[in-house]
Image (cartoon, rainbow, N blue to C red; front, side, top):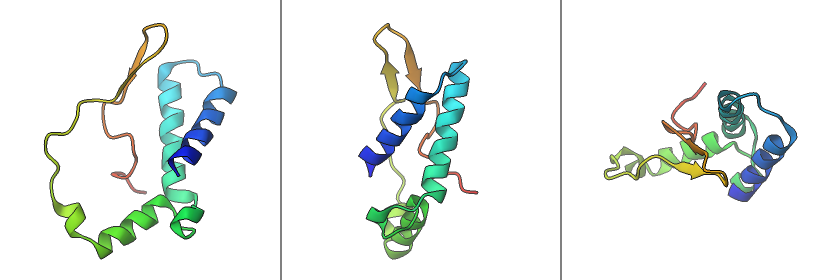
Length: 98
């Protein structure tokens, strides 16, 4: 599933000219939300990632109630010319629903 998601994101990024970093970030966040909430995945029995996660949480709530400590720092990507891009908060979209 990760490879499929990365391939789809790659297509979007390669086919679009972004006027700014903010526009790129907005596009990526919007696609992430669509992907997680609206696109069923065959690998998840034709459920969206959010639906599958909600079912998993219902079956194994103990996996979701413990707080995670010692999290790694921000994800940062440094491009070939020294430019960097970092996520300043959770980019996965699982925390926001609706």
